[in-house]
Length: 124
Image 1 (cartoon, helix red, strand yellow):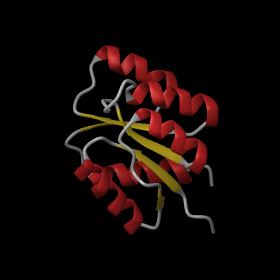
Image 2: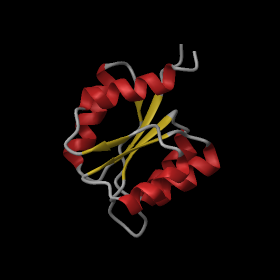
Image 3: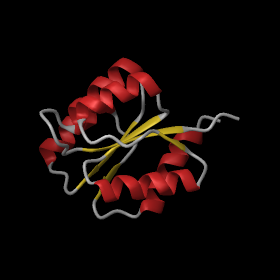
């Protein structure tokens, strides 16, 4: 049985590593976390994850929504967003990719895990 693969795009190293550790503990294959939107696009093309969990605010010129739009359009990868806050304008921009969920920091890592798991296994 193929392990489900997750791409974590988060510019806060502690959060990225905590998410990675939790997903791996529960049997997921996790790509090396990336911190920049451009790296997320490259990693998604190379690794073809089953889902991407991305912060909205990232280091670099492009934000997580822009990266998610490109990744979702090119590869059809489902997206879940995490952010310190989500305002109406940001929410409107993010809706373009029909995200699985929006998680506001600080979030419960187990809730993220359950939501991602449910979205990845609901088609079975």
